[in-house]
Image 1 (spheres, one colour):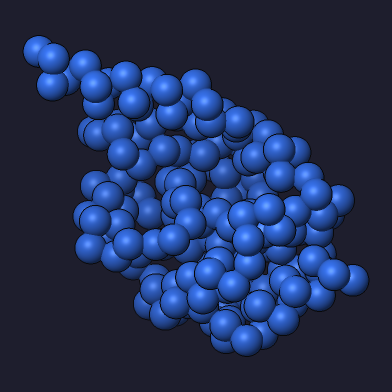
Image 2: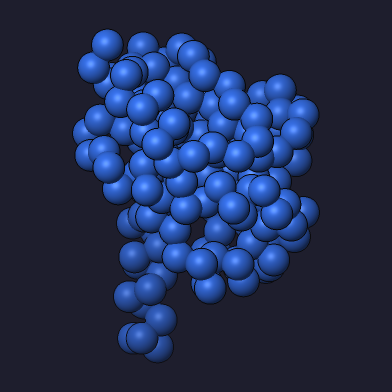
Length: 160
């Protein structure tokens, strides 16, 4: 019984400390689900930072090819300068869980709640939204992104 208390405590502590509202995908507790309100809360909490949001899915080949560029950019900038978030449009939480177990990413990934993509104007993936420090959407980029291009764009927003 004691061995179950620590993981449960850690999970509850993580949920309590998360600054934006998320719910957990059914069938497991390791892939948080982002809803519209949670996304707005996340953006408000990150004011003062450049925010990079990648809309993607495990079944999308170009999306998977884009992941190394995102990870390289995440490594280049500090957490104080840049917040990065992946929002998966996968249909099955288990597919995403399995992908993330094999492919360790260096930024948080959420499963999109039904309707989130439509609410945010996502019509195709991969899709990148970059917000400036004031919280304004300043870059919308479809398709593949090179690490150099992404990092240059983010760097310009950090020090205009």
